[in-house]
Length: 151
Image (spheres, helix red, strand yellow):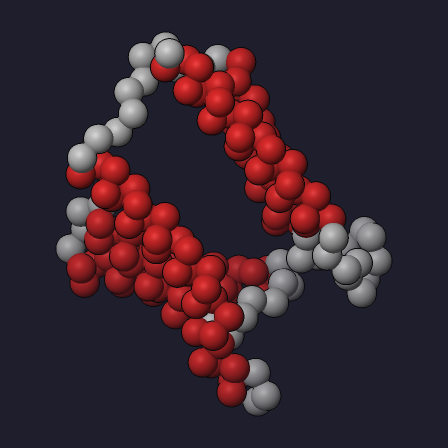
């Protein structure tokens, strides 16, 4: 029975990977042409990783996995709620603040002290923002910091 659960999960994740990858192809072509890195690159990479992981689950399921119970289910629900909130807050708050809140909350739920958890979120938000903006030349939403964009 448990192997069947892994296979069902693998098939569902594979469907998600295909849909996510297809959605990434719907982005408009970047100004530099088809050869430049555009906004669809990262989602396409994620779709490929998800598809490969899904295929692994389908082909080689875990023989002895048990569904989580009790507190673990609650923590999983909290993690999903944080990720949904992250997507909803990304545009209005901006990447840095939304990432600070999401990563900080997830680190805290995994046992880190609150101050350390949110400092990790702040560092992650700033470092990833700078990496995407300056190394990859991909724009991330600034949200409340959008006043800095005009300067």
